[in-house]
Length: 172
Image 1 (tube, helix red, strand yellow):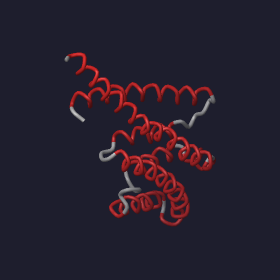
Image 2 (cartoon, rainbow, N blue to C red):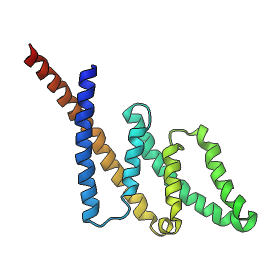
Image 3 (tube, rainbow, N blue to C red):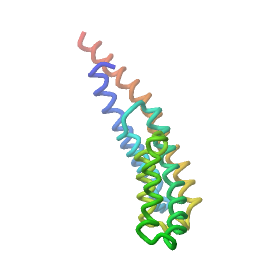
């Protein structure tokens, strides 16, 4: 893609993204759903990570899922270790294990997973009480929303190339 096409692609893609985000927000607002952060956090991560969009998509989806699974495991470990080791060690030991394991599975133990682990722990009681809802919303919501974003790239690329081609014809 040349520079002009790239600029047009980014313009068209961003406009499409705004419309897609507004539609998703309107949907979540209409159904009075309070856990839309599960979907939108993954989208932020998708477009702030480096690399090929397919690799980012996989890393975001798996990373978020692994982060939530690790939240469940960390809550269980913290609950089991705190009476034995005390509050500080009971908390730090499970988190330390996650941090130490990162280099061995960077595709799934990434910043996305750590973000989901952190955010889910803000209100761990709500998270624990609604595990199926949180996992279901994350899996379905992020796949649909992020998948939609990835699919919007193709028409944005097409429109950008076509508009630049039409500009060239008009200038000739």
